[in-house]
Image 1 (spheres, rainbow, N blue to C red):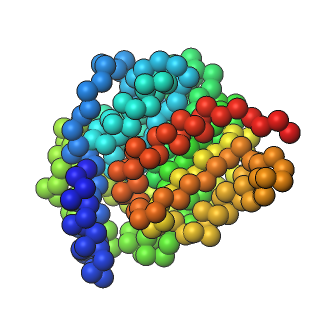
Image 2: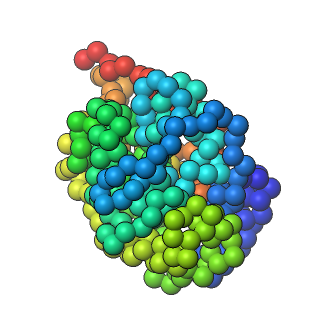
Length: 306
């Protein structure tokens, strides 16, 4: 995404826009993500996994310890995500997925729930005969990554959750207020719609796809604080300081994973927290050069001696 474009969008957002303007800006920012140039990297292994009633598209890049990469809502394996894959696959086997309804994976008559999507990830690992993997997810994908650790603990080594709460009320009020008035026409004529039509096996279903995601966004959810606390996989929560997730909710997630201690006085939690300054939900994707080294350090870290 061009830095100048982000700055221009920020100027609009800082001018106290109404809901229509906010929707337009969000659509353009997301469209810019999808319209990025594909980075030069070796041709991946690709396929479709028969999981959860889907033919779920996946790509495998690189070699090494396996890590599953989960995109956000409305996204696919394209644009800036390719740059992330290029960096991570230098030292790891990256399994990038296009979840239900996204990219080359057709939608089906099934809730786009975090539970269903996490079961799909577990099914893909079984299909690829990978016993366990690290999981990195952004936004929708971050919630799916956490649910994988809750529902399929034996398959998850570590989790990186980028800008994702564990409950719907973890979003700030204006984020939740956005969805009731949101319509698919916001994306009409944008690169996002064009990308959907280019990749999807059902190119004429774009309005249905957007409405399906809207229904998911409006549905209350709560993974359960007790369930998050009970997960065995260390988690790295990565957020922007203005990414739409309540700061107290971010702190609570980290606290549940044992993060609120004096690390100089006793062994600290294996989980981690990072909050990037001057960063929004969308522009987190533009912080790859900062985030990927932190992710690699987290995934490579060995357990502390107790």
